Image (cartoon, rainbow, N blue to C red; front, side, top):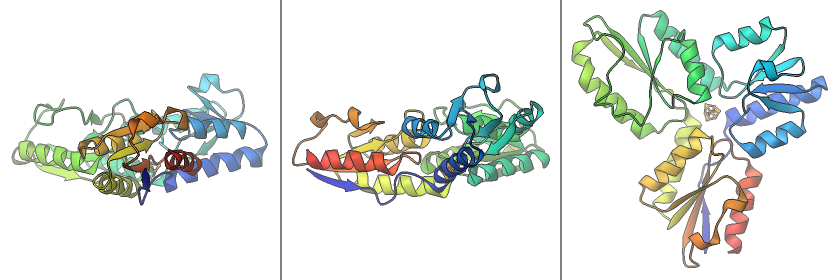
Length: 287
Ligand code: SF4
């Protein structure tokens, strides 16, 4: 069996940066850091961070120390305010590309736009983005049919709509969503402003996965179950018409999925560590 690796896969700059920030702070301070949620959406990385003194907590009530961190996915502005108000020290590991989306929606809101966020309503990043639009943004899930979707605000000739995307969404689906909304509303409103906030590392991983999926017999996608960008990679590989297997750990890899004459492609989400990718490739090559 031959194994091919996507030209771009695994850790993005934002994830590397977040891990570096919290690890360095824990070591420099010599005391634990409590992360409000997973610093990055990968359980193996979260486990390694815990060994360095960075612990995941669900809320401020669970913090047992002095230092609290915000994850790579960012948070609503009031989260940092609350952290400081309760006397904790703040370590902010928000990816700068997520911060760009925060600024974008805050500006749209200030300029009188109704803000639409294309993304997963339950995802940490999306909740944070909504917070930066003063909590008033409308989230439209990729699962929703944009032809059927009705805005929860009146459509008038002076209405202005601004659209952004969760950084890890699929470019093609976002384009289709925007095109449909544009066809439905542009003639009835004053302005439709679209900001492409899908991050470049996501685009590169998607393009590389799609290209590879077109050239191999099956794809293995490695990444955390809660990783939105890993899910997207897996969906893209399936949409390319190839069997695609999403695994989080090496143990989940089933040799029965493949036959010896096959060429298998490997890709991985932006929060999947290099050592895990190498382990999986090594095992596949040994089959
Ligand atoms: S996927 Fe994009 S937005 Fe998310 S951490 Fe990586 S670079 Fe930042």
